[in-house]
Amino acid sequence: MAGKEDFWGIPVSLQRPQKPAIKSVPLKTVTVRATPAVLILLSLTLMVLHRAGTLPVERLRTAVMDVTAPVLAAVSAPVEGLVDNISGVASLQDLKAENARLRAENARLQKWYEAALEMKAENESFRQLLNVKADPAMSFVTARVVSDAGGTFVKSVLLPVGARDHVQRDSAVLSGQGLVGRVVEVGADASRVLLITDLNSDIPVIVQGTRIKAILAGKNGDLMKLERLPPDSGMTVGTQVATSGDGGQLPAGLPVGTIVSVSAQGVWVKPLADLDRLVYVQVVNAALNPALATGDIAPQDGQ
Figure 1 (tube, rainbow, N blue to C red):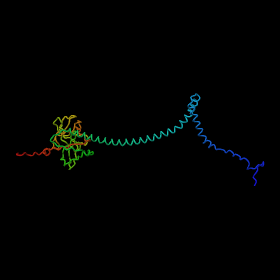
Figure 2 (figure 1 turned 60 degrees about the horizontal axis):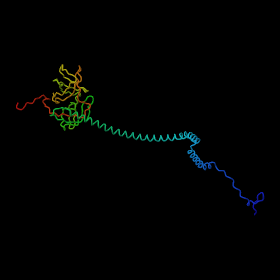
Figure 3 (figure 1 turned 90 degrees about the horizontal axis):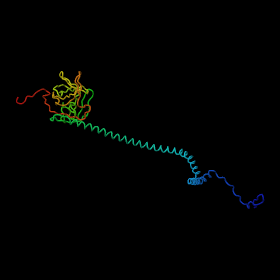
Figure 4 (figure 1 turned 120 degrees about the vertical axis):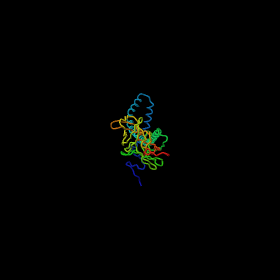
């Protein structure tokens, strides 16, 4: 079988093979392949220019810096803001943790402060009790006040001592400054004290420095009033009054209060003891002569 021939009659099989046509290369491929070479060339150029010290090169370098500096600043600004925000969040967390720690520390210190104030009040009360000067023959029972003064119409306090502690009815009760009241109710382990400012309190007293006796009456207020004073008694502000021992209810000589007002409305006395801040008190167990209370004088033996 004869082979194919071309226009000139030459067999096709004997002809020289033709080269294939050049294929087109995509621009993306060219860019990807050329980029490393361009970057390397640019780096070498910059290194050479950086090493060069001629004036044109320095001007070119300065011009490049002028152009690139604002661009770099604009690009770095968001990054710096992000870093600042991250630092701010971390700082806020640290502040919250520190705030919680300080609150816990403050609560702990507040408890210690309250305990210190309580101990200070107790120590002050004890020191004041040591200043009380009374008859050595008297015995005392020291107790802490477990309830404050009552309402508007009742001025009294409760003590956790009673008959088991040899507390007796009508026993005098002292603070570090002076008389605060007398025992009106006694239980086995508790007793109630009627304060000297109560409306039901009437205490026989004597004005110190004189022989004038009177009754010191409570008025359910901060002051007490001297009653049954003799005419022209000549009371003066600043004079102290003490128990007289009349009636056999209270021992004589216990300090009670100071005259603070003398007027047509009467003579008013302020208690020496701070009745609103009682912490520790002493119950005086004095062996009083029953004849002082009843008025009966028992005959002596052989009479």
